[in-house]
Amino acid sequence: MGCLERALCYIRRKKMKSVLLLFLFLVINSMVLGTLGIRKVSLGLAEELRKNAESKIILESMDVNRPFGETDMQAIKDVPNVNRLNRISEIQAASTTCIPVAGSEGSEDMFCIHGYDKLENDSPFADKVYRLTEGDYPQESDEVVVSQFLAEHNGIQTGDKIIFETADGSRQETVVTGLFLSGMERSQTENVKTVNRIENQVYGTADFVNRLSGGNSFINVAVYVNDPEQLMETKETLEKMYQDRAAIGMTDHTFQKLKMMIGQTGRITLLIFILTVAAGSLITGLLLAMWMRNRKTEIAVLISLGISKKDILSQMVLEEMIIYSIAFVGAGMAAKFLLPQISNSLAIMQGNSMTLELSPGWMLLVLCIGLAGIVVLTVIAIFPYMKKPIKEILSEMEG
Image (tube, rainbow, N blue to C red; front, side, top):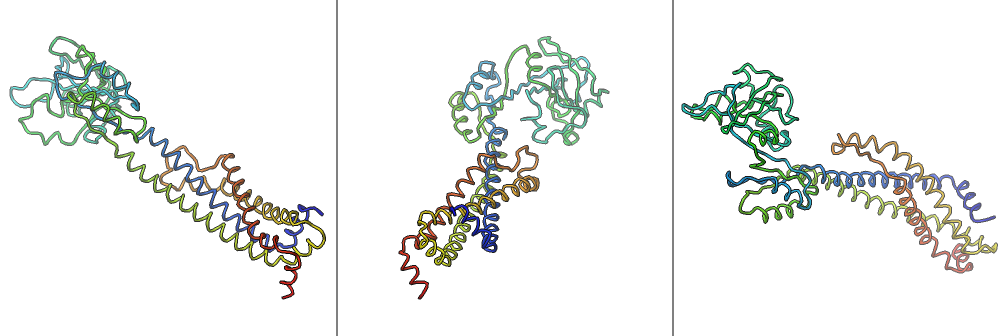
C-alpha cells in the first residue's frame, strides 16, 4: 500500500481528528483570505485616491498688471506631477440689456465677471459661499450664472440672453444657465460699490472672459496634481518659477483625511493577518505534536514492516496537505460569498467600484504558502520520532 492510500485510510479511520483539523484550517484560511482581501482593496483605494483626491496648488498673481498668460499655463502643465489646470480670469464690464443693482453713490454701473475652466471647483460655489438655486453651471463659452436678486431686478429667467460690453467696445452675448444666492445680499452696506455687490457678480468660463477682454490672461490658477504624495515637491518647483509673481498655497485636506482612514484599515488588517497566521501556526503545531506522539506505535510498526522513514513521513505530510486543501477550497468559497457582503457594510468602500475579492493568482499563492507551512509543521512534529531507532521507540512504549 502506497503512502497516499495509507494517508486516505488514516483520514477515514480518524474522523474526529480529521474533522477538527479541517475546521481549524477552515477558520484560519477564511480569516487569512478575508484580511488579505481587505488589505488588497485598501492598497487599491490608496492608489485610486492619489489620482482623484483633488489635491492642488493655488497660484495667485500678486500684480494685476502682470497676470499669467498662455505661456505660463503651458510651462505649468509641463511640470512633472501636474494633472490639470483650472484657470481663473476676471474682468469688469457693463451691459446694454441688464441693469446692475445700485451700489454706493457715484460708482459706475459695472458688473464683475469671473471666469473658471470648471466653476464647480475653486470658486465660491465650491466653498459653499454661493449655491445654485436654479439651473446648471456654465458648460459652454457663452454661458453664465447670475444672482437671483439681479435676475429678479431685471426680470431675467434661465435661458435668457445678456449682452456685456467692455470699456474698449468689445461685446459678447451670453445665455443665463443658472441663478445663485449667497444669503448675505441683504446684509451689505450702502457703501459697497456697484461692481463689488454680490448681486453684480457674474460667473462664466475662462474662455468667455478672455474673449470679452480680447486677450489670454489669468489672475489665478489652480494646479491639480497626479500624486498628492509629491505635492510639496511640485509646490517647491512652482515657487522657483514664480517666486516674484505669485502667492502660492496648497490644499490637501481631503487626501490626508482619507489617507489616514485607509492607513488605519491597512494596519488593522495587517495586524489581524499576522495574529491569525501566528495563532494558527502555533495551534496547528501543538495539535500535530500531540497527535504524532500518540502515533509512535504506528510509526514503529510501519518501520518494522520494512516501510522506510521517508515513506512514512510522506504519508503524514500528505494527510495534512489533503485536509488543508479541502479546507482551503471551503474557505475560498466562503470568502467569495462573504467578502462582497462585507464590502457593502464598510463605510470606506461605499460609493466605490472596487470589490473585496482576491484574484486566482493571489489564491494560488496563499494555497502554496499554506501547504509549505503545513509541510514544515508536520516535519517538525514528526522529526523527533523519525530520528529515533525503532528499539528506543518500542522501549518508550513499554515504559
